Structures are given as structure tokens and as C-alpha cells.
Length: 332
Image (cartoon, rainbow, N blue to C red; front, top):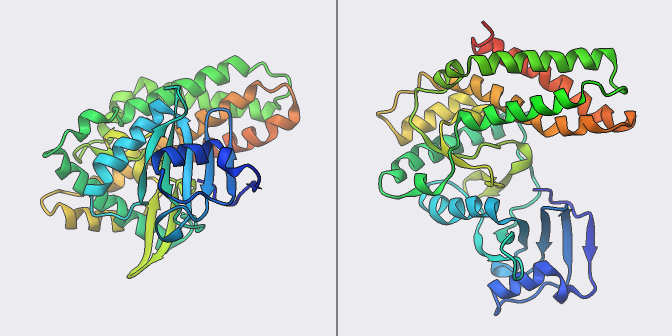
């Protein structure tokens, strides 16, 4: 979640959709004197409501598709309250107006410090958080119906991402504003994708070794914040809309694997952890496939200026994908 506001609204605050939704959820609560606009897109919006939460704390109002909000509600209502991990206070959820297509979620604003994968302390913190969460969620599943209430969260999701990226690339390889170097990079992404799909049974096998659990599936710096707590830094992952129940590879690509293993053994002493390093490498493959699929739609632009950033990203992802495929033993 972005925290720096792109605008601050101070007029007719009571009529703002986020405030109306908050009033529906908490009619007795105080209304904000302004609204911080954090993100406004066609299908998703993010706002900060200052002073309306517990003890006058700010609240994040998130509007998105009801189908995605349903996954987040499951995590916030059925999973995180029962797990030994830090999580933002969840205030609740209401439909957006009379329609059923969109929904509001209201969460504690935990501050401004983003998780950084270049900070070793953050990496270890994330490893411990995910290790505890994965171990405890596996145990929780034995006494709850959590797996039934979440979508499949394993390798098949990233196979679909691979196919989405391929479709976009094939549809735009004839873009006249691509350079020869960029064209060759896109062809190499296609080659690697075809190889992975042809060997997807090996990809799935490389993810095995630990039981299925609750997975975030988009754990990265923009989706986690760090805040000082009573005993030191605390981690707060957000944006659980891509969460699911399945193999955990995607969650391990950007954490300290040793810290994760230690937390996993602490939470599940009978669980072998020898497969963690291998699974984490496959997680990096998944991360690259997902990242590629998010940028490939931009290849349709018939304006060189609009191709510069996505192609720079795609060439970087290609390098990471090539290295991770090689490291995982999936290149042969």
C-alpha cells in the first residue's frame, strides 16, 4: 500500500465514498476532517481516514472488486486472528453502495516504513514471520475449514501467469517501436516460458517437501511494512487479495531462508526443513513469471516513450528468470 498521499481532500469530506462506507460500518465513530488519497484507479482505490480509528489512529480504506476482497476478508477474519504473527487491526468490510461488484475493507494504518529486501534485518524479520505463519496455518487447518474458503494457491497459478505473459508477447512482437535487442529479449522470455511449461511437472515436484499452507503469493516490499514494537521491529504484510492455500514457494523468494527455517522448526519441530532452500529458488521463478505478466500488456503501446519502462523491467526480469531457472535445476 502506498502511504504518501497524492492529494488531501478537505471539502465535503462527509460525502466522500470512503467516509460514507466507514459511517455505514461504524456509525458511532467520529468522522475524519480530511481524506488522504493514496491511490485512485479504475478498479481499486486507497484512502487514509485520519483520526477515526482506535485512540484516534488513522484508518486505511481500500475499495476493490468484491471477488478479491472476499479472499482478503477470509484471511483477516478466519486466519490472522488465530495465528501467532503481527497483523494490522481489521475494522471490517461493507459493500460499495448498492452494488455487489465492489467492496470496502478498513484496516489499521501501520505507518510509513516499507519492508526492504536490501535490509538484512527486514529479511530476517520476514523469514521469521512467514515461518511462524506457515507452520501455524498448517496446524489451524486441522481444526478449521480455512483451506476450503481459499482458492488454490500453488504452482498452477503461476502457470497461468506464464501463459498470460506469452499471449501478450506474441500479440505484440511486431510492434515497430521495439529495438532488435528488445525483440531478442522477448523471444528469450518465450523460449524459457515454453521450456518451463513443457516441464511443469518438474516445476511442481521442485515445490514439494513441505505441507500446503496459507500463502500470500505476492509478498514483496510494496505489500509489507515494518513498525517498531515493544520488543523490536514488527512486520505487517498487506494486500492478501492473491492469497490462497497451497505450496509455499512464492512466499520464500524475498526472505532470509535461514530465519525462515528456524521459525518453521520452532513452530513445527517434527517438520523437516531440508527442502526450504530448493523451494525458495523455485519461488524466485514464480516471482519472475508473475512480474513479467504484469508488464507485458504495456507492449501494445505504439509510442516508444511508453515502451521504455516496461521493456527495461522485462529485460531485468529475464535476467533474474534465467538465473533462477538455472539455479533450480530446471534449465535442462
